[in-house]
Length: 200
Image 1 (cartoon, rainbow, N blue to C red):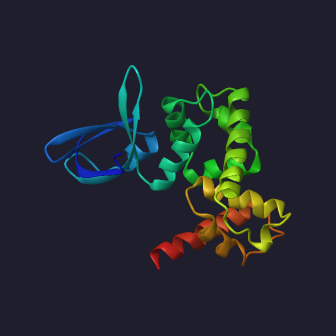
Image 2: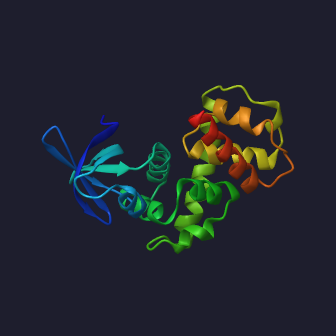
């Protein structure tokens, strides 16, 4: 409904940023990382948003990047993970580190976040891996030959899609990388190239 808000920062807390736009102050709950990245009060800022409507509250969440918002959407789709828990995780994880943990199945990293136990951490990894794989199948996107049976390449593809990149964007980048590399290295190199592509 509301994709993003651009305006003047009129209030900041570690997990909240209020942006005034058109005479209205929008209170956006944020991760600690997003709040830290937003400029000082009276400077202009842009936040990508997600509006949630529940029986007991309507809340607006703000993110410094589309990738972080995509991670938030993925996390809140996991059973037992609400917006507060998702923001807590994103306060501890950058989007690329989050994707690496999911892609490599390293659920133990998530237990470092307050309130996330072992079972919840395992569920995050399992449900997100399955969801990303299902999205690729149901969208009917052409499978690149380099991904057939390639464990590291498949993990890298899944992780980058968790970050919000399309299969088409990722396939072209991964196709020129060495498939024998570990998934973490493939993701690192792919993110560097995708960043260059956006700038270029």
